[in-house]
Length: 264
Length: 185
Image (cartoon, rainbow over all chains, first blue to last red; front, side):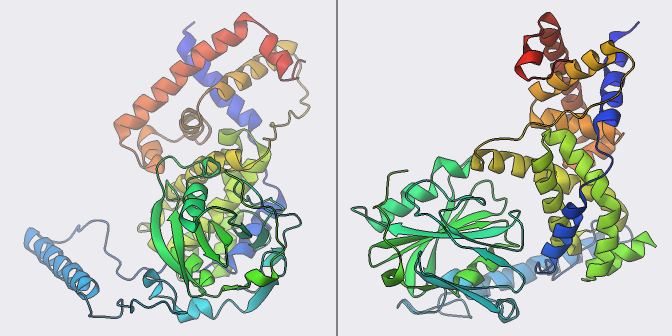
């Protein structure tokens, strides 16, 4: 008997036996609940996958038009002092330079608000989400979806959440504190995160897009020697995260002081 | 009918998407469970894939490739959730062994041995085996679901099967592994 077909047959039989016939009902229920507050990606220009009926000249023409359009958009965005993406250098309550495209329709969905008296901040979030306040101080590590050291805002499950925690900086500078946390091994990053500035409640902080870019981001800011960390896990997109951050107000004077930051 | 549902869902019709999701959830969950070997992670991966499907549906270029696209999403969710959640969790729930009525003890032993062998494979290796042997996808379809070249899919499948052989042989040399996992018959 040939051993190879025997093994492949065993694998196929095994999978048919092992595969669960049904998913638990709540899996679908919670997914559908989540999409109630999840916007779809907008497709601005739908280009066919192929050009089956076009001749070579037509394809060249389409490619040329696309190249010109992209070039024009690039020029409009990159030319200094021109266009909407040119915020002034002075700090303001306006979100970070990368947040100029903050969609008002998205912002209008954040109708609920949460004020944390232990972490010292307030934030707006979508209707239908739930808030699970922190029940113990955050002193080390990265708050996870099931952590009790951060306020957790989510649509009813931990497949998508925003966690917010704060702690005193202790004797660290903000840069040291943010650098340690944004590169913490808890993220499971396979390459360094992409860092960009973000302004939260008028204070410039850091936003980290963790690697690989699969929907995990974090933001860090500090006021009055208190550091705030925002963990975004699979929010619909970066704009969504930034828009929520744009609603944050920091109240370090209200925070419950935990022990100073511990090195990760 | 299904094409119409996909088109409606793509235009933002949540009800249409609910019908599509209801028809796909069991299959997606089975795929996730076989890849991740963990019930809780599979539940998370399935939810995640459905949410991604809703979010990204307007970007689906070919409606007729909806199923392959869904498989790709659940495979990605398995990879992402497997990686992140394992690090973010205190412990991993081990796939429970449900009592199965089998006539012969040797069949049970055989199944346990294969299960342990599969656990020794990498997630990428298990993924290609699931797509090929559970979903019965051809190498071309498997390549499409994983977004890799057909040649890569073929060689990855070959190496996954070859990796399973020594895993099974190692297991056959001693029953220690079975006892360690508390799964002796």
